[in-house]
Image (cartoon, rainbow, N blue to C red; front, side):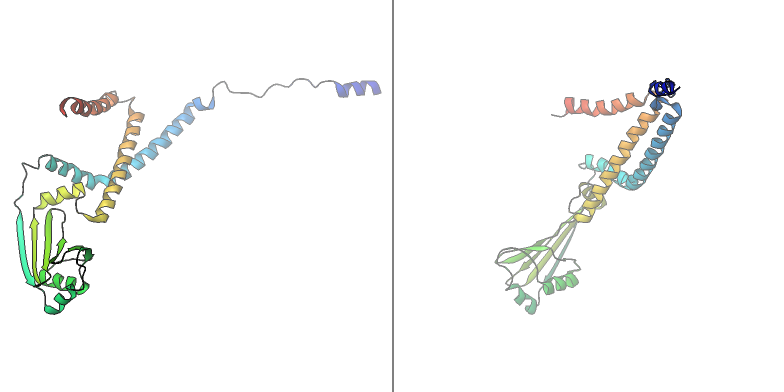
Length: 235
């Protein structure tokens, strides 16, 4: 009996049945695939509508001004010129003597404040171009050009502003011309939102392409037409 027990301890255990493995891989599970597709579809729709809401007004503005810029020669506004003159008080004129003889530096604060009230201007800390004879301040803005000149000897002040109308104003906003850093940041944010809008739209086209057979032919046409125009008609 003792020998039988010892031998039984060393006998190999009978083979057990391997665990059941599904013949269908998990990634091919139609339910899981449908859930994943639904998740990404919801995410894409959410990013798509949020980015479209952010860039909607900007898209309308840049599209409309794209047309006006493309036909700028045919859509011309009548420039309106505003010319004003003044003369610095003697106390302020003396401050110009301490200003630089050349180079770029803002006008003295008291001089800038007096000019702002006298000529209804907002000079801020705009740099002036100094020479021995005058101080010249360039003040361009969207849709307008302006300048201010101060004679350092006599104190004679001349200001001129040329406004070219609302269309020119919007066109300059389209180009970011003389619009300042805040508008530059807006253009960057708008561009990013537009990229998100277009990229999510591309993925949504991919997800719905099976039900819409013209999807990829139309996308290809949108690529082919400008490519052909660049190669054949732009030299």
